[in-house]
Image (tube, rainbow, N blue to C red; front, side, top):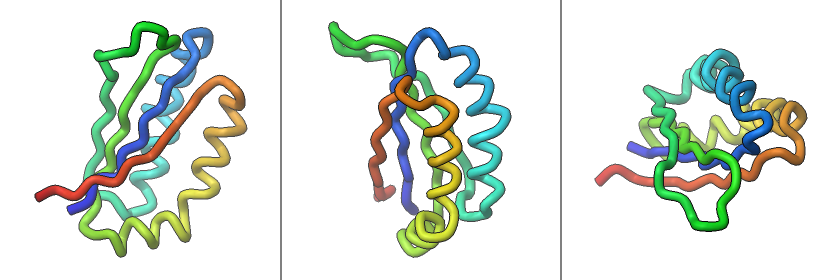
Length: 101
């Protein structure tokens, strides 16, 4: 099993809108692709002293790297683009892949 983790730091000024949009629009759209078995959406509680905004981890669980690669090839670009356009310049994101052992 593979965990596709997306960590996002979002500016405080748009935090409420982003949180609602992620829960009601973005995460459901990612799940509707059919590549993921489940997801978790968590607020990061440990922060750096100089960190601004709010940080979240969104984790999507899939069966295999092949499933994840197919998702990335066929589905991820428009979903990431929609997020980027809506919150341009107001977030920083990075992605991590984990394997359940």
